[in-house]
Image (cartoon, rainbow over all chains, first blue to last red; front, side, top):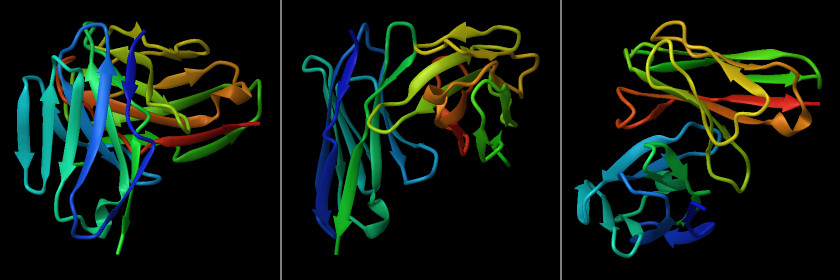
Length: 109
Length: 112
């Protein structure tokens, strides 16, 4: 079967750095996405990786290792507005997205 | 630009009744999707459409039907609602089946 694993919840301090992990087992791989979802709102796109390596956008870095079936999201200089759920999704051999249950990130002052 | 709109925002529905959730996008995206999101689970694909006039079944299609008469609209119909269909429903679109998906604001449906 297909499976995406993420920690259920994480807590971090304002101004610090947090790493959110995602491991996957899917039938084929055609890219990995990270989305942010604030409570009661829609998911919004953060980043996309298809090759091993990292993608950087401002305070956010996403890293992919296809050989390990693993990705992580690094958020730096955390702000209170970063409190949200972070969703990992893998596009499989049928080009459908398989979604993890999400990691709820709580930022404390 | 509106992007993707969904209606209604929320709805309480009696079991056995039918309901259509509406989704409209103005980005001229070819592909559209319906997902449901339940607590503790990842988003699950109900139905999708890669282009106007075609539809396909996702992971959890039973009890739902869709149509794609034109590029902009992708309604989701529950023919006879059951309590297990209580969920938040998100519509999404992408310029192609390989593109990034963009989501509408969601419809919160409660079936009693």
